Image (cartoon, rainbow, N blue to C red; front, side):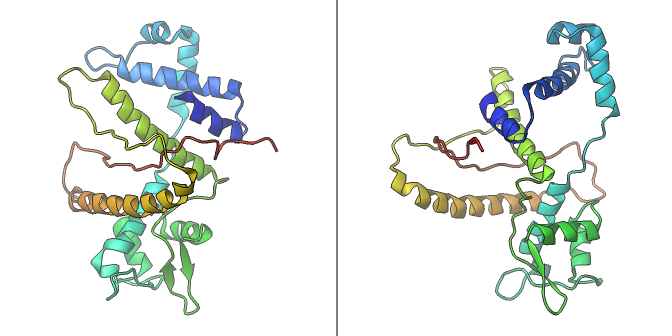
Length: 259
């Protein structure tokens, strides 16, 4: 579990001591939320016993957690907006593709698209980010044209690390749920399709095949989720749901190298 995490941390200059400090906070946070009695938060003494940290250290980490503000879910909002641009019939042309939009206006503009799908990120800030990463371009006549339905921050951008952490959290949460569930409890789908004897000459073809089929599958899932999301005035006890698709390959590619 830790190897891919450590590989990412080393690439970004995070030494073991910094990781250890971060781990303290996570231990305290999880122990406090997951091991309470009758739905109440775990008290400091029990957190200390569970984690091996002193009560003083537990208090320190809880103070740090309380002071920290969660980062806005920027990427989810951007992804939602791009999905709307590529799927909402009001923003599609006769060929079924997304149309170029005026920046502002009550109907069929980036402003109206953002109002529907952009969440709480200001439209100006979102547009600036989309242009910066090459997902949207401004045409000579001043309209905005999408170049890709994918939003991937620059690899050196801190937001790329936030996205990577979000992906690993989603995978890990499902695995942890299935490991901890009771015999008769609900399981969450987690499956793989692998083959141990694939010649290298087929690697590129498989990558292209997965790119096409994986994206097609995710678009169908995205459509289902969009049709079943709560209305603005609807009360719901649900939350974030979805599915992830990722390529599996055991090799040396992608590992950090000495520079």
